[in-house]
Amino acid sequence: MPLQLYDTYSRQKRDFHPADPSRVTMYLCGPTVYSYAHIGNARPAVVFDVLYRVLRQTYGADHVAYARNITDVDDKINAAAKEGGVSISVIAEKFAKIYREDTAALNVLKPDFEPTATGHMKEMIALVQRLIETGNAYEAEGHVLFDVTSFDGYGELSNRKLKDMIAGARVEVASYKHNPADFVLWKPADDNDPGWKSPWGRGRPGWHLECSAMIEAVLGTRIDIHAGGQDLVFPHHENERAQSMCSHDGKRLANYWLHNGFLDFDSEKMSKSLGNVKLIHELLEEWPGEVLRFALLSAHYRAPLDWTRSLLEQAKTTLDRYYGTLRRLSDVKAAKASAPANFMAALHDDLNTPQALAKLSTLATQANKAEKPEEQARAKGEMLAIGKLLGLFEEDPETWFKTDKGLGDKDLDAAAIDALVAARVQARADKDWGEADRIRDVLSEMDIVIEDKAEGSIWRRG
Image 1 (cartoon, rainbow, N blue to C red):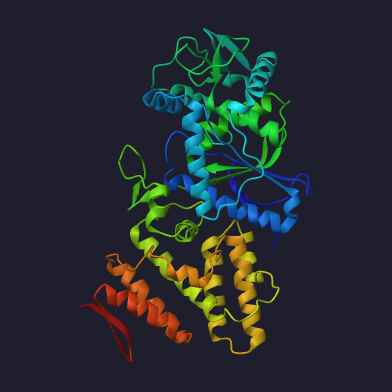
Image 2: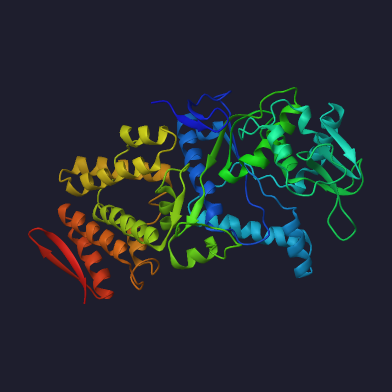
């Protein structure tokens, strides 16, 4: 089955065909490094890491060029630097390092390129100059703005009409704008803020401009895949697309636009204003990184994901089962095997990780039931091949079970207990007695009593 990806621009799934199979290009909008990243920021890093792994397997690691940028100049970074009495580079370097460490703990591979905004000022200034020369941008009161009416395709990515955007503008519009929807390419900076010399005075780039310049610098003027969160479709990606196309004679910026869905917290949108943000840094103190990764992959990447404690508990229990299988097969040399065809078919269907994880569950059951050495070797090899694509099973099984993170000393809700009991029933059916006993012990520590009856296992609090 060919790799199919849902393209936001065409609003349909399309077979993936890179412009140049010898250099497949993908760009993901990375973090603005002014503070700790929250778990919602980790979703695109994780799901598009899976796509990166699939592309590397399909085309070869040396033939995939993946860039994820660092936004290291921004109003929020400026504010944090002023509050701390330090330069913006101190803030940006600190939190960029933490972001790399946090995502590495989630088994996210390093991108091939990690461009920074401050490292590409010359390219940004050159891009602004080109847009002025083509008549798509204008200077006004120290600002340079993009004229949205100069680009007929403006609004096509987000499926919005320009006249409606202008009519619906509810904020006070700057007097120097020709149109309310015009956006800033370059803005002035006073002596108290970071700035760079330019033909329009000391200033700094607009956020949208940064990504266009970084993409061109490290990947080229046209790329295969541009990815990011759903919240970036408008205005960020819409504006990127407009300025890049206008600066390159209408050449498309990306052949495929991919966007992941929002992450909610207990059915409520996760946001700092609501005070319900869960930081990756803090979650890693309580849970293994693979648990967070598994939870993020448990829903289709384009669908919303409700982030709950129950989700993490179920993810931990499921991973315990798989690691239990690998521990039981520790003396078996894994066969050189590829991921099963039905698993690959799920991933090739627009990264359908829930279906792919279902195939993994079936394989784990088969591995537990396998008795012949060759069957065990093949099953173990296929499990590890799946893990390589999903970014799982990177711990030694014995080390995994020695961790004090996750379950064990936590109060479980009924749904999580049900999940544990179901996992124990499955382990018993697979004759994985060690895993069944481990789950029973976990529940026993929390005063949960299991009763095995002919009609099934039931539980009660002791």
